[in-house]
Structures are given as structure tokens and as C-alpha cells.
Length: 87
Length: 208
Image (cartoon, rainbow over all chains, first blue to last red; front, side, top):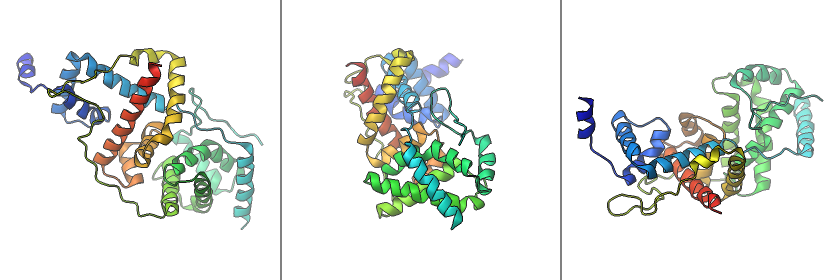
């Protein structure tokens, strides 16, 4: 039965799949679109790789470290803090 | 002065939400070490975000300093309805927009430009060459992270702001919409464009 439903579902092309990926990555795709995208990904190594690369972009962005804080800037802010607190 | 250096395994200083209340209470009590802790955690991140709104580094520095003043003066009224981080970014973005001297209004965005090319049947014109698996190697991941940091200033301002808040800072989509005054659809289009640009640059890096 499930197989019958899967075959009836309108297939999508790579262009549609890429258009759905941003919402998919946010978990914001309606069920029907999510199922269509996942069907497509199951049979399309190019789109699967593209999605994997977008996930790399997200993971790697989360690993970018902040710039170092120089001690001089910190000292200056602490001086300002004392001024603000006393004022 | 001994200040706790809070870092997670990737080396990024962070403050877990559970610690907000304790830190806020110390700030409200005028504890200077709490202020130092906050500056150590956020100063350069605020600076990076400010630079995505105002044009010059020195104006961004002033915006960050104004933000700290507002934090010191306003922490009495902080009620914890958002995280401390979101509150800081909210103050910073408001001040940065005033400094930029322009009305903040997000333009409507067409979401039909996917940034990739397809043939008339909707199939890839140039299918992506696989490399995602290789990034499990820590050294490669670090190289790419360093590349992302370098590419960041190339991104258009609105894309950069969404990317910084969503993917660098891990702030939720709905909070980002509030912070930037954009619709959910717009923030997603901006984020997607930013990621597509980065993906292309990382693709080039992986083949260099």
C-alpha cells in the first residue's frame, strides 16, 4: 500500500530539490514537500552531495572562532566600566 | 584578576543559558569580574556583527562601546525573557542601525534565484563534485573554517547578518526575524544565499 502511495507522489527534479533545501534544513518543510525531497535525495547522488556540502557550510561556520580580544581593548573597557559605575 | 575562561571543545567561548541568571545577578550587583567575563565572551563577536551593519571599523568600535554602556545601565531591567546573548545582539543591532543613519527596512526578496545552474529539464548543469565526506578530517574542517572567516566580509550586509546570527551564533530562525525585522521567508532566502556563496568558495578551496 505504502509503495503505491510512493509511486503516486509527484516526482521532483534537481532544481526543485535545491529550492526546498533551505526550509528542509530548518525543519520547516510541510510533510508532502519533505517526502518528495527525501524521495528525490534517495535516488540522486548529486543533490545528496549538495545537501551534504550545505551541511558542511553550516557546521564549519559554527566552528569559526571569534577574533582574539587584545588586552589593551579589555583594559580600556574596564576603565570605562569604572567610570560608568561611578557616574 | 582571575576570570573563568569558558570554552567549548571547538575553542569558542560561550555562555550556557543556565549561567545567564547567575551572571546577570553579578552584573546587577556591580561585580566587575562579571563585566570582564561578558566582554571576554562577546566583545569581538559584537564587533564582527557591528561591522556587518556600519561601514567602518572605527564606527563599529563606537557602536560596541555604546552597547556596553547600555548593558551596564540597563542590566537592572533585564528580566531574562530572552537569553543574555540575544539581548546583547538586540541592543547592538539597534545602535548599529542608528549609527548607520538609515531606516531599517528589509527589501522583499525573490526566492527563485537558487544560485546554481540547471538544464531545461531541471537537472544539474554542473553536478557538484563530491568532497563533503572528506571534511570529517579535523584538519580539513579547520582549514575550511578559516576560509569562511576570510570570505565573510565579501557577503552582502543582510546575508552576512543572518549568517552570523544563525550559523555562527546558533540563534533560532524566529529570534533572528525579531532581531533583524525580517520575515521568516526573507531570513531563509538570505541565509540560503549566504550558504550557497560559502559553499561555492569552499568547493574551490577543496579543489585547490
